[in-house]
Length: 146
Image (cartoon, rainbow, N blue to C red; front, side, top):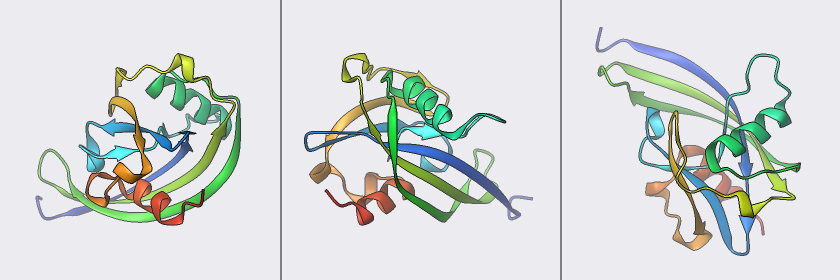
């Protein structure tokens, strides 16, 4: 069974949060993006309005409160990976991405460890290299306009 490929679908909502020349990122601690930087966000709960899910995910992962958003872009991509048991998998990731506005930076907590998040940090755009970015973050980098 190690050679069987399972196909998974993940639909998530993510935030592009900027301050000066920096972007807020989380560190992924598991899954296909383990060890990479990613945008805060994740999967909405069943029946949860999308922007409420985004607000909740940002708060859970970074401590930051946000109140308004504008669409940045929608992205999709296939990610081949192996799970912890060595099974080959393919993730189809659909990412609805928003810019967050009215951000309460005072509530930032870089030490949150939760589910698949191992803390968060502010980085300069220039510090990001493709090797340390999730596929979503790579797409954002390529389509970003200041």
